[in-house]
Amino acid sequence: MEMYDVPLSKLNITVSVLVERKKMKTCRLKVFPDKTIKFSVPENTPKLWIEQYLTSKKQWISTKIQNFEQTKGYAATDEIRSGISIRYLGEDLIFSVFQSDKQVVYIDGKNLLIGGADINNQTKLFAQFDRWWRKDSLRILNAQVNKLFPIVEKYNIRRPTVLLRKMKTLWGSCSPHRGTITFNQYLTKANPACIEYVVLHELVHFLYPNHSKLFHDFLSNYMPDWKFRKKVLDQDEVHGL
Image 1 (cartoon, one colour):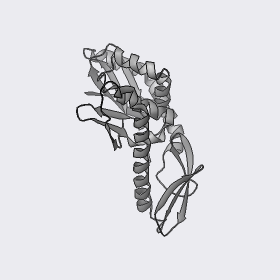
Image 2 (cartoon, rainbow, N blue to C red):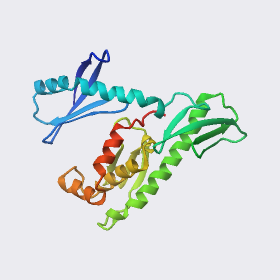
Image 3 (cartoon, one colour):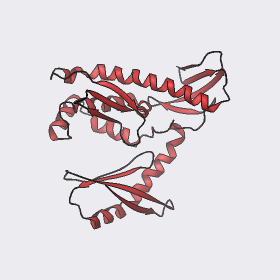
Image 4 (cartoon, helix red, strand yellow):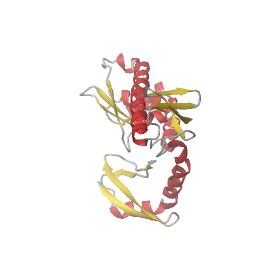
């Protein structure tokens, strides 16, 4: 992997682009919500061409970063207190923090209620919320796997075990030989249609390990609008708390 620095005069910053050389015929430039930038190119792509291409994409990169910055307040927060918004399952929920003898976290309409004995301790509130978020994410993702698994089960595929991690650049990854799918915990901030796309994407990899024509044909057969769902997911700001 290679790194290229690209100065963005519009934003008065310099960003680093991670370049990955792969066995592919086209190139793919992607900006992630955390400002990580990845550029996948064919293995023998000249360095000069890469530099010129990234230079030509300065405006596009700047616009993507600005778009993520504008939506950041709706998706992430560094504080848990009443009135702060948080994204979950594509919805903007409002934290409601209250005093309680027991630690509780639950959703009621458009509110995400969190109660505890020490509601002024942000460290404890974050830990409490994260435990609930992880447990609920596993519930949601396992339910999606159960719903979509029959699509590949008929090809003698065993139901994979669902694992969860906080990842910066991947929504999911699978290990067919281990029988596991690892999902990004931030995925449950996206809307259900996007979550469904990622789950089916990973399940289809148990049949087709690479992003081959067969892979995409199979995916399109069972989810004709997957490209639209992917576009929405890639543009949505779901990282952060």
